[in-house]
Amino acid sequence: MIKRRRRLTDLEAQCYTYQILQALKYLHSNKIIHRDLKLGNLFLSDKMEMKLGDFGLAAKLEFDSEKRHTVCGTPNYIAPEILENKGGHSYAVDIWSLGVIIYTLTVGKPPFETPDVKSTYKKIKMCAYSFPEHIPLTDSVKDIVSKIFCLDPSKRLT
Image (cartoon, rainbow, N blue to C red; front, side, top):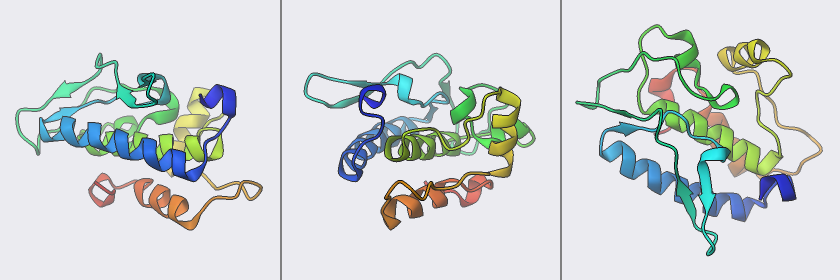
């Protein structure tokens, strides 16, 4: 849908974000981190319902405060704490990826995308993104994205 339409309306993005959040709420309540949340792993049913797939990088935690240390994910969507690989990572990596999805759905391209992976990772580690002025975005979209793109995972929205 994104390839065809480039970007979605705020209302469409809001509806899909809600469905993704419901999936994440279910996973996280069952101590599962998806770790590869991206547009390519979101599927639309014939009723335009969002389905989350590809659990190949998912991790099942034994307890909520457990951290994982495997560097994994897709370059444009990967959370900074995975790249830094210092104290491990947990559920907040899925929220970071959700922020990338919301930005991409409403702007039409990923926030940290560059021609090469090293530059993309550098932008992610610095949280270097901006909202294009030529695309009309609501304050609520900008607000939620900016609250998700917090380098400190403990301060990121849940």
